[in-house]
Image (cartoon, rainbow, N blue to C red; front, top):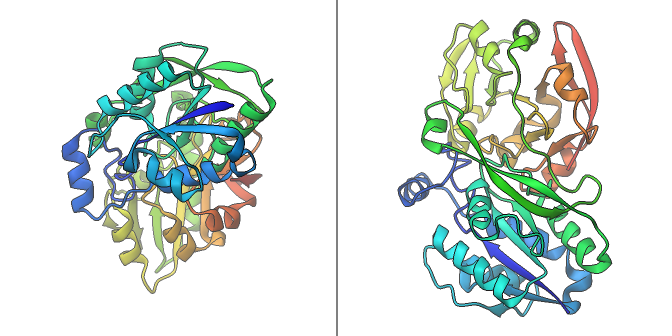
Amino acid sequence: MKAIGLVVNPVAGMGGKVGLKGTDGPEIVEKARALGARPESALKAGHALRALESIRDRVKLVTCPGEMGEDIARRCGFDPELINVTGTPSTAEDTEKAVREMVRLGVDLVLFAGGDGTARNIYHVLKENKSTPVIGIPAGVKIHSAVYATTPRNAGELTRLYLAEGSLPLRKAEVMDIDEKAFREGRLSARLYGYLWVPCAGDLMQHLKVGGVGSEESVLEAIAEQVVEKMERDVVYIVGPGSTTGPIMEKLGLGNTLLGVDVIENGRLLAADAGEEQILELIEGKKAKIIVTVIGGQGYIFGRGNQQISAEVIRRVGRKNIIVVATREKVLSLDYNKLLADTGDEEVNRMLCGYIKVITGYREELVYPVSS
């Protein structure tokens, strides 16, 4: 019988909707809770576990007590074997201790829900141990690493394929993390920590996030010109993070939060670095539009670094009021040949699927598919 080691970081992703850009450190977790953040990683782990329903009776699930895995495993119909990790709230040390015990027990794969910090903790234990591959369930705010599946459900599907078929190849995937303090100050400082082995099948695993290049400046200015020219009076614009959306704010003469979400109306800044609740308040009873860009190398338009633009925000704004901006090179270089959405809400993900226009320059557009 195959064995899966399940680790859930219960605080992963809590900082996203409230604009904290991560939850590294207990003080940030407490701040997130004070701002009304709710745990979401277990729900995402549940999406992955439900994709294993067809093989549930043929696998053994080894996990941690309580919110680090047991609770969601039992809700999904598993009767897990528990290991001795009792940290409440859980810490990075708990994650590492759990993975060490799972390796000692000989699990065939570690399935974990978290973000880049969680991936880094697991790397500390496994290094490049090919005998224990991993699959990440994307549940964090900053998911730059390539060890994550494209969606929580796809994490479960890939786990099922790997365990049931047993012939999937393995590849090395990068473990990246950023300096959250610098990130909150608007500076991106990323570091490659190493590699973990992951199964690969089709487009179920996401790619490493890559950034833009300076030569794109004129193209970004042309994109900004097009967006500003088409802006309407008395419409609230929710401007997502990124170096592609930044020039739009600059053209309007407004300061922008490079790594946060800004809200504007009639050329006036309503809120800088806004969280989900503030965005919902500002669009209440008004027509609104969302401006987002594409994450280079990965293709995400929602669910990676812009969780403030939550499923509820997207639902209220509506698909027809979403404006996607990106350089042509960034879009055409995507290996998946599609854009991705991972909002945490399957109904909203389905709503976003289909073809969407991408503004790639002044009066230039591509039509590209969106998948979840």
